[in-house]
Image (spheres, rainbow, N blue to C red):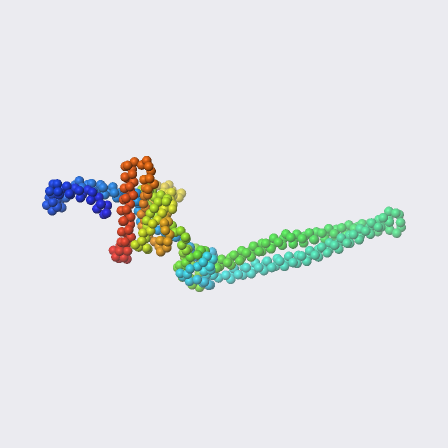
Amino acid sequence: MFELLLCSMFTILPDYLVRRYRQGKRIGKEINLFSVWYELRYGITACAILTLSLITLIFYFHPSSHNVGSFFRTLTILPEKNGRVVEIYVDNDRRVKSGEPLFRLDDRAETESVEMAQQEVEQIRAQMAVTEADLAVAQGNLEQAQGAYEQVREELSVKADLLSRGTNAVSRREVERLEVALTTRQGGVNSAKASVNAVQTKMETLLPAQLSSAEASLRAAQVALGKTVVRAGVDGIVQQFALQIGDVVNPLLRPAGILIPDKPKEVVFQAGFQQVSAQVVKVGGLAEMTCASLPFEVIPMVFSSVQPVIAAGQFRPTDRLLDITERSAPGTFLAKMVPLYPEQIKDVPWGSQCVANAYTNTHDQLEDPEIGAGRWMFLHMVQTVGVVHALLLRIQALLWPVQTLVLTGH
C-alpha cells in the first residue's frame, strides 16, 4: 500500500494534473468511473510498473522472514533401567542444579550386589593376610630343610674323609647311607623352595589379580546402585514432572518428565529466508526483529552465520531410487542471528514467534572512489527504500497485539 501511494505521486498525480489543468478534464465529468482507465492510462500503467519494481527492489535487497524463532533443546528425564519409584526429591516447576537428585528407584537388588561385592573383597584381603602367614611357615620349613641338609652334608664330609684315610672307625656302608640321606635332604630343600615360590606367586600375582577383579565388580555394583538415583544433567527447570511414589518408569516408553536447560549467555535466533535472497543475506549483515511475546519492540540483530546448504536438498539412501519430482518444494536457507544488544532479548522467551527484516548495507561500496554515477544512484536508492521495509516492520509490531487479540479472536 505504501509503495502504491508513493509511486502514484510520481505517476498518476502528474498525469491527472496534465489532464485537469492542460486539457480541462474534471473528475466526475470527463474523468469518471468508466473513463478513468482510459484517461489516466499512462499514469496507471507507469504506477503499476513502478510499484512492482519498487516492491521487488525492496523485498530483494531487504528480505523478510516470518519463520524466526529461538530453538532450544529439552532433556527427557529418564532412568537408565526400569524400576519402581520409591522416593521423590523435587517438585514440578522446580529449578535444579546439575547433579542434583530428582528421584530414586527401588535399589534392593543393587544394594545386595554391592554388599556381596564388598564381602568378596574382604574375603580376598583376608586370604592375602593368611597367605602372608603361609609364606612365613614355608620360609621356616625351607630354613629347617636347609639346616638338616647342611648337617648331613657336614657329617658325610667328615666320615668320607676318615674312610679315605683307611681308618676302621667308619664303614663304607655308613658313608653310603649318609649319601642317600643327603640326597633326601636335598629333595626336602627343593620342595621347601617350591612351596615358598608357590606362596609368593599366590601372594604377589594371584591374589592381587583376584582383588582387582573383586574391586572392579564392587565398582560396577556401586555404579549400578548409583543409577537408581536419577540426577539432573544440567542446570534448568523441571517441567511435566507428575511422578508419584510407586510409579514404574521405563527408559523407552515412560519418561518421568522434561528438564529445560537455563538460557545460555548468547541466545541465537534462526530465520528461514527464501532462496532468492541467498545472495543478499550475508554474515555480518544487519537485521531487525519483532516478536509476539514482546510487542511494540523492535530488536536490532546481526547475522552470525548462514547455513551453506538448503535442507530441501538432503537425502538418505533407501531401497528405491529418488525421483527428483518428489523434491519440488524449494525450501528456505537458514540464517542465524544474535542480538546487537543482548539485554534487549532478556524478556523474550525461548520459542517465541518472531518476524525479521534483513537490510542490505551499501556503505562500503559507496565509499569506493571509482564508483560510477549510475551505480552510486542505484546504491543510494537501495539504501533509501530500506526505510519503507523498516516502517512496515514497526507498523506490524504495533498491530500485532490488535491482530492477535481482536481480529483473530484468540
